[in-house]
Image (cartoon, rainbow, N blue to C red; front, top):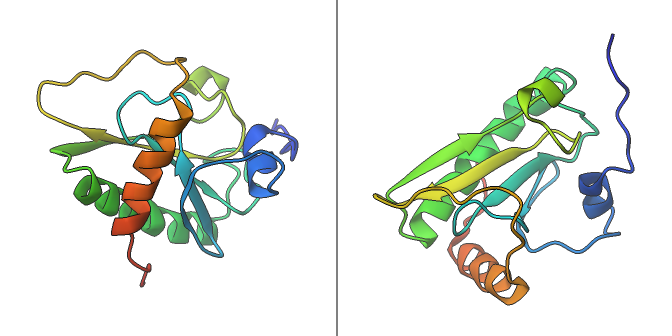
Length: 144
């Protein structure tokens, strides 16, 4: 049995502008912003504008377009922050580790010898703003 999408989740509220976010990218398909509880410096979330609960709920058309934007944002984040690599996470359903039920991809820049931080620690807002600015400054328009 499928659970219905709840538009009052925090990412739905961010998309509607009800909750602020440090945006790094936006177009008609996707919205990318800084994670307020980053597991790495420059941790970015990419979400679809479609109301999709998880990987199983999103339309294949949106998912196809979204993953291209995830790749685009990841490339820019890697360059902007001079990362050595990248980790991409996507969790679906509670058993899969999903906590916020709006499909999202975690882009985690990685550097040799630097471990991911434990989850659940709030970041300094000024630091997130500075990282977002650095990423936006390196952002190029998405072309398919």
